[in-house]
Every structure is written in structure tokens, then in C-alpha cells.
Amino acid sequence: MRERRVLRGLPLVAVAVAGVLIGHWVAYRLAVPHTQARDAILAETGHSYWLWAVKVAVATGLAGLGALFVRHARAPVRAEGRSIDIYTWLLSRLAIIQAASFLAMEMAERIATGAPLSGVLSHDVLVLGLATQFLVACLGALGLLWLSRAVAEVVVALLSHPVQRAAGPRRPFSLLVRPPIQVMVGAGGVRGPPSS
View 1 (cartoon, rainbow, N blue to C red):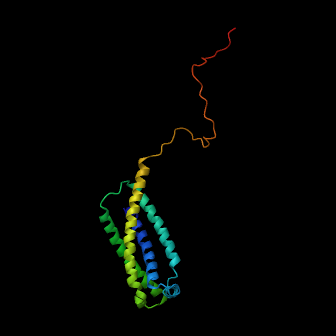
View 2 (spheres, one colour):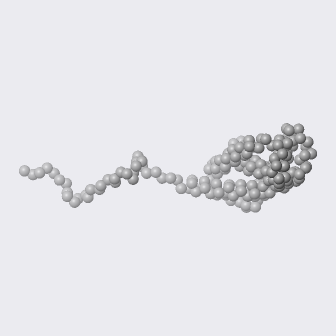
């Protein structure tokens, strides 16, 4: 039962992790458009973990995609249901997870470097961050809905047409081997020993 919950939740978590990082990156680009100033702010506020976080997001994304395939392979059913209801469910979860994660990440970054927590309010990072998290959650929910339905269709197509193998041993170089010559039956009759 726990395994089913993990398979169900992993794609959502993967999209949320990627969404938090993308929204975080976009928020800082919008809040501080000048590269040198942005780099200085990021260095002061503890963003040295960024490359590690991107690697975790990629690994989580691949695991989430694998979980989608496994989930649909276990119960190969074409995706049905009202798309708007599923989209709303996904969006509400992603928006909450991403907003809470963004706030926690910003506070943890500042606590880790000793920077004041009030710094999150400077440069409009907090407002832009929450707004971008919501917009990225909208796109993430749409992408996850589309991807889930695409994976379901692929799995149904793969499982509905099983590969039929010919009986007998496979010949790896069948194109290089001449086909057997068929002898015409009855053309010359059965030949026996010569009569004396």
C-alpha cells in the first residue's frame, strides 16, 4: 500500500521540486536584472548549493517519470475523467507545495549564512517569488497532466500489441543466409536404382 502511495506521489513531488527551482531562478532574474548585482546577492544569501539542488531535481524528475510508467503499467487504463478536475487538483497541490518550499528555502538560505531574514523582503524577491511559483505551478500541473495521459496511452499501446516471436531458433544473420531451395514435388518422381 505504501509503495502505491509513493508511485502516486513521486511524479507530483518531482514536478514540485523542479517548479520551486525554476520559480526561484525566475524570481531572482526579475527582481535583480543586473547580473553582477544578482550574483553578489546570491553569494551573500547562501545560494552555493544551487548546482546540487539542480542535480537533485533532475534525479527526482527521472524517478517521477519512471514512477508514471510503473503506475500505468500496473493498471493499464486509458486516462479518463474530466481534465479540469484533475488539473485543479494538481494545481492546488503544486501551488501549496511550491509556495511553502520557496518560503522555507529563502529562510534557510539566510539562516545558513547569517543574513537577516528581513532581506527576503528587499528587491521584491518574496512577492515575485510567490507569483512565479504560482505561474510555474500552473504550467507544471498542465505538463504533468499531459505527460500522465501520454504515458498512459503509450503503455496501453505497448501492452495491447504483444510482440509475437517466431517459433524455433532465431538466425541472427538471416539476410546473409540464402533461403532454402524448394524442390518441386512430383516433377521427376521418385528415382530408384537403375534396372538391369
